[in-house]
Image 1 (spheres, rainbow, N blue to C red):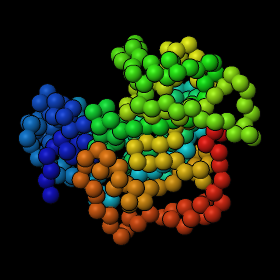
Image 2: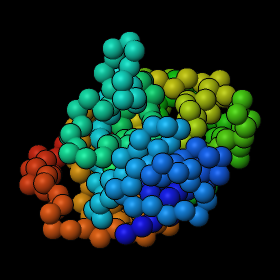
Image 3: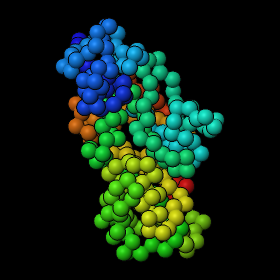
Image 4: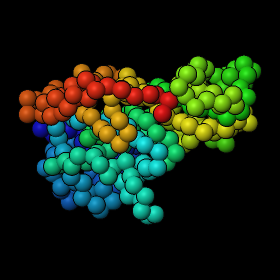
Length: 278
């Protein structure tokens, strides 16, 4: 069945529909040898080129989403010229399509990363207009006072514009933590994902971030039973919650795509352990 061209291209993660409409209008897209026009429709098996490069369209009513517990020391790119490990290295191979990372974490940040095979879902979850919440645990070296927290929640001018946390909550240190008086944990929430934004916000107040971990993205939280460098596949209910969070029509899940790791998920829950501060 034919679909609007920009919708087909969005499913493979090339950009948002609005951005792809501009590509089509600029003559960058062709279908079966003819330059495409805005409003054209296409099918998945048509020969579609973007800037002369063939694009393979994968249609699947059951998109997949993974949650991954990123350790410090991995980069959020598919390859690294310096040979450092990447977050893609241990992901399961796909028979068709590709994994698209939903946002990034810098090399010194750990915690939740989401990956999907659905390009438009990825684009919307990252786009600032949808204000998808990201929650972090952050350890601060330096004195933090109420005036500083007020500034961070009201808005701070950074080099790329005004930024702020939606909430900042101090966390009490646990008795088994290696805690010294100059380090304190905070739980913060952002509604966007600019480069190193959490770190830059705190640094604007003259303090240092020495540990940073993302613990949730939208409606998805990283459970303690998922250990570092491990991934699990989201169940259909969780995937649907992500679609609804960005006003996308929820997918239908076919029997052939029932998740394969349900048994492993139950086993991990049985041995559930972990510390969000680690």
